[in-house]
Length: 436
Ligand code: NAD
Image (cartoon, rainbow, N blue to C red; front, side, top):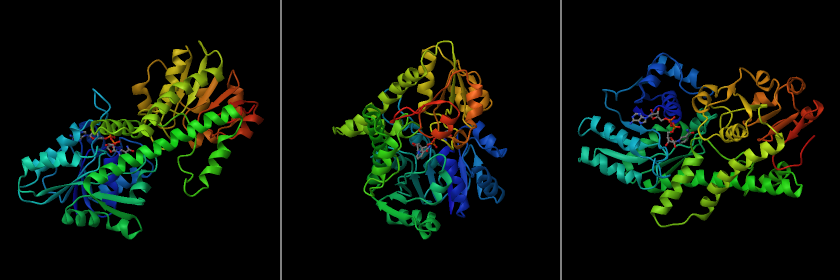
């Protein structure tokens, strides 16, 4: 099948490469000339395990192309994977890129030639109806069918998530378009992924409802962590005991510095904006958004309380990305902690295994280290903000010898406490008694 993917970011590039891997002929299009130029040189604009080899393989096989322009050959399917950031005036999703991309694709398609236009970007319920109206103006013969096909991949495990999804959601009332989408994903369905055919509006809602539910789960366990800390219980034991209940499940039950990234914060806010437009109050989601915001601020205070006076003192922050396995620092909790440390006058030094280039673009007044040991040299306190596996395997005796202080704040409860204890470090975690 001939597929055009519009928007070559985290979702578009992974989807394009994986669809080529499934045997389709894919052109990834982006308006960002620099991004496409890098891809044409064989460089990847994002960090995602396994992606460089897959892109190189598919590009060499001629199944994956990159361009700033829509391809001359008509496509059977166009996937819209452009960004849907928060709007400038409120927290609703800015759909201008989705609308522009859909109009460009429809106008480009030869008249009368059928095209399924699938919106993969996360868009509020009802967006497909608006896109359909826009497209109908350009192709009144109905040759372009607008479908919702939300994406559930996670940065850091994007390829496996795309190729082995729990479910593939396709929302459309058109049987022909549904059959085409089923054919696109046939190899995945044959390998056991569920194909969930829904109304278009339901598919759009599934994505937001799923993300909001996961955000609620994170905010919930973070609240329990606060109570554990106050009541002298251990959140690790509590979440293990909770998660073994199959009705609850163990995923998303680890406390931390609050959710971040390019999806949960904006999607929960956009869902609230949609609910507001429909005159519906979502109290749980409102509470989750407020709790998460409060947590980011609160953790800054807690780091300062644990670290003591940081004024004019070096503090090392290990991790800048919102989670391991990605270079994405959008809405990363690490940034809030760094801001709190800077306000308190600390000399902040940051290290991240792959996120430093992006961190440099958003952080002012901090130093960047070449490695974790370089980062902690002379540090009064060390804060672990992202649970990169390499941080778990550090030589903590060496860390202790390099630091000027002995406090390590572990915002992810990921460090091996016994090793820190043996190295004479003071470990401050989340939702449990302090280990000294
Ligand atoms: P991104 O910012 O990494 O990439 C978006 C790309 O779209 C950019 O390269 C941008 O230049 C391009 N673009 C914007 N307007 C364009 C236009 N008119 N024509 C061509 N290209 C255009 O975004 P992302 O993280 O890949 O997210 C894309 C969508 O997928 C969003 O709606 C997001 O919510 C959703 N999503 C993201 C993830 C994730 O983990 N990142 C997961 C699931 C869903």
